[in-house]
Length: 560
Image (cartoon, rainbow, N blue to C red):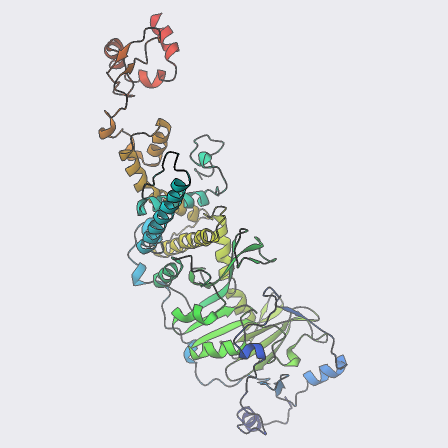
């Protein structure tokens, strides 16, 4: 700015209305932006922009002189968009900057008292009913086809499943995820051998009928804070799928990409979409929220559309955007940790130089000044500090989900997406639980204990029913059930006298004697003759459990 310019002249220049002078900025859209699409550029392009040589042959000294010229108060982009070098005066706060909503649990989700009730806010009864109906339909269809293909073999039948069994299945998956044992064989999961026990002590988505219902439950259960983050999630999947993608920057490389919106503070997943539509993701928010995006989404037209909804935008820009002034592009003469700003009445662009010849360019409609903060001797603009604080919510969700993921190796992509929804439901329920019942001293294992308790709660009801109604369970399986549900310590009364064989050989006598009996030991339910029933079993009830695996050894001891 020239020293001879008065305040009145500066105000006249900033608020001039004629086209001959400095007018209101006019956004000039490129062809791909006018059509509403995204430019075909790798969405993993780095935010750090390198300096390129000037094709017009302008010297570095000339560019520096033009950039530092104080006589010109405006930058002008390639296609005529004009930006002020100084902030516009702010007389009052905009409507999109006034926070009115309260963060936290909504009335819809405020009445839960147990882990399973928090989980069922997301995996609600209507979702479970769809799973039951579709599982029974598919199973009956497969069995019917098999019976028609092999009519000479024993015909198969299907016992209808119900919501209790589905919840037990989900509970087992959650327990596997909490124990990080999704790739372990099923027998090891129920094994009591210490060497196998792990941590016990310490549109395209049309086939996923429950997707929209699940998203609606996530929206109703939580009111987000002042800022949200929009980014992609990549669910690992290497099977056959028409929209499987490859992303070299992700740990899993191959998978199914879903766009997600999460709370910037606690990484609660608010909304999910199968397509690249920011406006659809923010639609349930209402007004007065800040949205953080990466350079795949951030653009001036998107900022204007969000402003119409009274939402602010902050995100990185790609260097090929036509509305970025050339002066804000990376330059070799710009010193490290320096910042350059450009303003309109509604937008702010900052170009930050972390090192020579490189720059990071951000667009914000929430910030309207050129303030910077000295953070460890690196002078960072407030826009960049705000972006760093709010950009990682979706990535944090991915990290937390993968830590205790309940997903197994699936060959069908709908199951892969359902596994991803199950992980998000478990994480969201834990976040709600932590909000309603906070701990003074938190531990890194709190979430794992929550998942174990949730899994056992989902499985318990089905275990009780199966234990009481099934008469052909092995002793080992019954013991496992009693370990999970201690209330089942005594055998059920209705099954004590149910035996397929009415009589049998006394298990305490030598096999050569071949003594048949109809009497049962009250302790172990084995056949015993009258002699052993009177003399040994009733006098020493623990004798059965001691000798049930070694009859011959006892017989030799008894005869001696």
